[in-house]
Amino acid sequence: MGLVDKQNKFSGMVALLVLYAQSLGYQITFGDAFRDTRVTYGHPRSTHRFRLAIDLNLFKNGEYIHSDDDHAPLHDYWDKLGGAKRIKGDANHYSCEHEGVR
Image: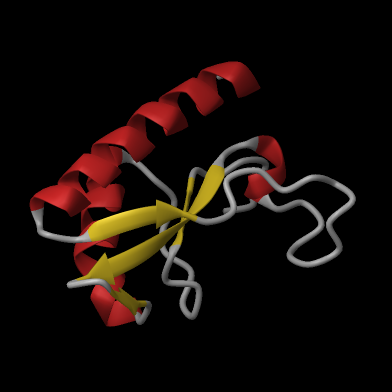
């Protein structure tokens, strides 16, 4: 599958994930969705740089929640959609694997 095809599939998966999160009563804002190569933090081959990762900020009743447990139902759904497995300690990161990186 080509990169544009992967990016297109990823975008649709993110849309479904956001709708699912909202149906559970969560509020969602976007964090990093694309990481320019001039940015010095993160993995040098981060899937953010390929537009195949997004960080979702999760809120419940207006309060930011960020633990692995808080994001667990969304990661379970993400797994069913075919997304990359969760990265422990990076709860708000949702991605598709690309060239061995998630």
